[in-house]
Image (cartoon, rainbow, N blue to C red; front, side, top):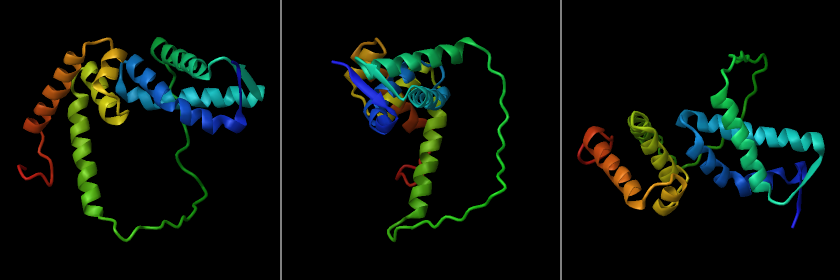
Length: 181
């Protein structure tokens, strides 16, 4: 059954395909730092296509988006990129009102963020498979069986890598607020 997608339902398409597309990009990329750029480029490309064509009739729009992601990955890793210069300064300054909740514990939030950054820096020093497993398990919230299937590994191998790395983190990283720290 064909589905017609257009700019009007872009947000709905984005929300329904994001996790699967992210999982694909994580599994296919060779550097975890590239994932955010690749996912963004994929959906920007889809947006441009829908803007130009007004609508597209597809059998499976998830496969179409994965196809865009595949091309973005091939382009990213297959060609040297020229550096692009973007203006980071803006002449207009705008003030925004921010509503701060009463129960905000800024110190705890900062400590949590700093701890997460320490752990992430430590994990980024590991091999690519370990990084992918952690990203898929903790960020994408995939089950071990799903990770094993996506990365074409055995479940026991995924568990081994995950649990050994957790043990390594506990032994080598001082976590603020931890009773053992």
